[in-house]
Length: 555
Image (tube, rainbow, N blue to C red; front, side):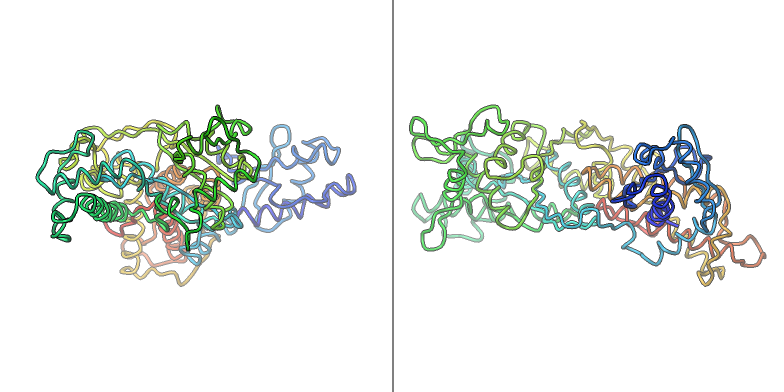
């Protein structure tokens, strides 16, 4: 009996009791309204419900008295071993071993699908994260959002959302000109321009550009700069994409900022031009001293924003507006922005933009701000000179340890990682602890096969040891953990759950044998416990996958 079936059972019991006390009291009541929770103290049972407290006023009853009526009916339900009323009207429910143990087979049968849910079904989401400038390598400042954004996307998709992972490529403006001049100077053997980009990676890009375009330096000056800039940009963007893929981070869309300013087909207005017209049509644009403004203060911004200067040039806010509107045009009703710690000023600006565009700033847009991450002992990149590169961190610490550690903490808390711990193959290293538990489940399965223990029999009523009850209880929780982590955009809840599950598995392993000792015969309980072992391995594997971390079968 899983939480969903138990909630449905509660509804079947409570609805007629509520109607008997007050006709119409159960109208509109659903199983989703009857929230079940795991008691902190397992001595209090497998599940707890506050339904009697919640409904007492509606039905006109004393909460504890109503809880007693519910408990009496629940005791008659098959699969429930006991029901107690606690405090002012809490209902504690204990399942019998067969009902609790049946979950193991359900998990094994479901496989990779176990943990998926439909809590986000119907939501069409554009998730923008990382969005690094294509003028240099990926660095530590991007690493945390890369790990968190990808894990968040996996959680949302596992919960039924239609979602696109999007990387906004900042490939327009003065920074690209500085980048192009830096590469061209290197190609000519000249010093880096005063406002240019330093680092040997620029020299590497220059060599690649010259190899691909040997006629570069014979072209007119303006053509040299354009070719050096565009070719180096192509290579650098490719390097960024390769770094992300090696970090097990995937994007569906790389959206070019340039495309917002480019004229449409047959000279039609650009997306930025269209955005201005659309915002004006919404009634939130005004002109003042030759400049064009958006009245974002109507939607909580600290000041109105210039969208086009008096000299006719568009501001960066214009690109933000065009990009936001474009996301809606592509069918994304909900937009999530994951931004770094230095982007707090963007929160009100983007929400105000959503309001000016006719959307609901509290519903259609989320702006999440992450805090800084530092890593003890990390060295500056030899190629870039002034940053810590993602590729260097990955090579030093490992993709799994780095991704897991970054996903293990709330995004809004500053984070310092200790590489000495993350490189250890001990239980002090959280990712090793979880991965080792997964590898142990496979080792048990291999040894079971060698000893003649298979899954040809399943007798869940034999799973009576206290460690089995605790382990099965945690396995039941996985779909709810996934759904809640997706709802609150917090992948760290999955990581912490996996660590708890690993601990419960290790304790079960120490107390409950899957393989009989010595010459003892293989019995039903051994075959049944193999189901529990394999179910645990499946949940650990599914959880690690949601965090973008591998689940090794041997360690």
